[in-house]
Image (cartoon, rainbow over all chains, first blue to last red; front, side):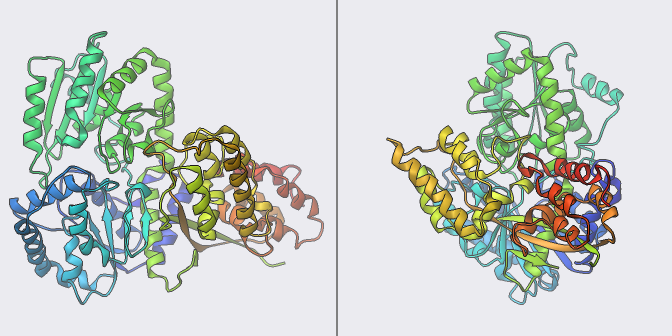
Length: 412
Length: 215
C-alpha cells in the first residue's frame, strides 16, 4: 500500500498535515537519498519504509538505497554498534580494511545517485564512509546516528570519527548522544507510523487468534518485551524480573524478536535466552520473521504491561509502540526511553531486574491506574512521537541546510 | 491597516557545543558564556519542546534545579522569572546569574546531579514560512486563531515579543492599528500565558477575543 499524507487525517489534525505540505512545497523537486544497511528488521528500516513515500507525497524526489556487504562486514559493523554503545571491543586493522572495502564496493554502484542528490542522509555507521567516496557530491550530506553513543568505547569512536566529521550536519535522537564534531548537530527523536501493520488498530478476533496461536493464557497477566535478541536489550534481565514476580503471583512472559540481516549476534543471544527459559511453560520465546508486524502488534495489544528493559537504547521504538497501544511501559533508565517513559505518568524507569519486578507488581496491583497511564501514554505519543512530527523536522532540516543564512531564524 | 499575514514556524533543536553541567557552579559558569540563542531556547521555546502534562516550571533551568539538583528554593526563584519583561536577553542573563550567585553563596555544598541528570545546553533554529492565509478584519481574528497551528500560535504570540515592537504579541500589535480596539489589545496582553500549552493558549485567545466579539 502506498502511503499518503491524507491517510493520517483524523489521527492528527488537518492543520498539522497542511503545515507539512507547505514545508514540502517549498522543497518540491529536491532529490533526497537515504542510505542504510538493511531493508528489513530494526527501527531504521521501519522509519524509512514510511518516510520515503511521505517525502514523495509532499513533493520531494526521495529514494532509499541499501548497502550490501558480506558476513565479515556485518561482524565488524556489529562491533561498531557494540563499541559505540560502550561495550569494550577491539577492531583490527584488517577489520577496518573490510569496512572501507565494502563501502568502496557500494560506492561504485551508488556514486551517480549520491553525487547528484540535493540531500543525502546516511543512517548509522555502516555506510558512513560513503561520504569520502563521493568527491563530486553536490548536495548536503547528513549523518544520522540512531544509537546511544553517549559513552562510546574511545577506540571505536576515534576510528569512526574521521568518516563522520566531514558531513555537513549530523542528527541524534537526544542531546546526550551528541559528540564533539565540527558541524551542527541537530536533535530529532524518531517516531512511529500509526497506520503501519505494527501499529494499526486490530480486530478483537485477530487478537484472540494470536493468543491461541501462541498458547497464551487469557486468565494470566501478560508481560511482553519485543526486541531483537541483543545483549543491550537485556532479555536475561527480563527473565530474572519475571521470575521474581512469579514468586508472588501468576504471570506469563513473551519475549518476541526478529532477526535483522545486519545483526550476526542475534542467534547467540537467542540461544542463551532459550537455555535460561527452558522448562517454564509460561515463558514464550518467539523468533518471528521480519514481516510479522501484525503479530507483534497483537502481542503488544494483548499485553497488560509492555517491557523494554534495555541497558542501552538509542530511542526504543518498541516503547513508543507500547505507549501508542495504551500500555504503561516499564523501561530501562537509559537513552531515549527516558524521553518517553515518565514515572507514574506513562510507566516506570528501572535500573535492575529487581526494580522491574517491583514495578510490574505495582502495576498489576493497580489496574485502574494502569488504564489511566495507558490513556495518557497514547496522547503523549500522538503529540510528540508520530511520524508527522518526525517528517516536519526533516523538512525543517532541509530548509536550514539549504538556506544561505546562518541565523537562528530563517524565513523561507 | 493592512491584512494580518498568518505565518507558521517549525523549530529544530541543536546542540550548542557547550559541555553539559553536572552541578550548580557549572550551570552558572556556562550560563554566563552561552549564546543568547541558548538562553532564549531554555526560557522561551519550551512550549514547542516535548514535555509531559503540566510541568511545574516552564523554563528548563528551574525544572533542572528541582528535578536533578533537588534544590526547591532555587527552582522557585528561577521558576517565577518572566523572560518577556526584560528589555533584552542580556538583562535576563544578569538576573539569572544574580540568582545563581546568591544561591551559591548560601549553600554549604554545591548541589550536583546524579549521572544521567546533566544539563545539556541546546538551542534551536526556527524556519518561518508564510501560510498564504490573511486576516482582513479584526472580526475575523478569533475564528482565524481557532484554526491556527501550534507553530503559528507560538510565532505570533511568543516569538513576536522578540521582534519589533519588542514585548508585544503580533495580534495586539495588529489590532492596535485599528481604531477602537484598545480594550481587546489590553485583554490579550493580560493573558497569563505561562501555564498554557499551545493548544490551551489557542483556546484561551479565542475565548478572550470572542467574549462580546471583537468590534
